[in-house]
Image (cartoon, rainbow, N blue to C red; front, side, top):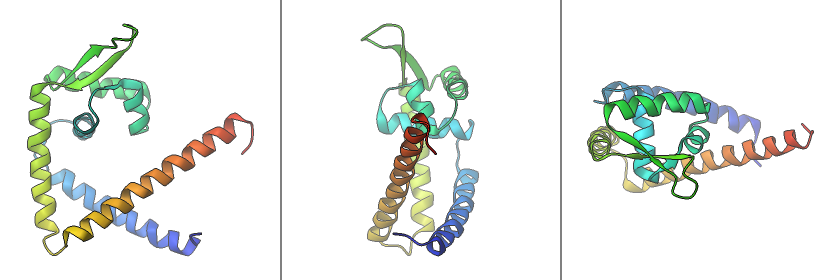
Length: 155
């Protein structure tokens, strides 16, 4: 089991990671809202998704996600398509323009990362990617467990 001292070191590392992310965002060529870029990348990776699912993935209220979707829809980068199973709900997916913007931006960010990490090996990058994914998975599992105990009336 991890120690609280080790978690303190992790917290400092996460703070540093925030600075790295701000540099990447600042140097990105994307012209829209930063949340819009994350939404484009998510749809590129996952395919069409419902707005409620996107809101859960981004941990925002559905109304917030709806505003981001509307902004990207206005730009012509995403579109809503009816759910073929019930016809009442909608899926959101990239348009060809959205795919182009996502791919161009992703290529530029990959180049930025490759340049900044020139002294890293592919194995180093793979290990960090794995650990970041594991961290997200652990937080998701912890959040689900807490939500289940709150529903049962326990804390």
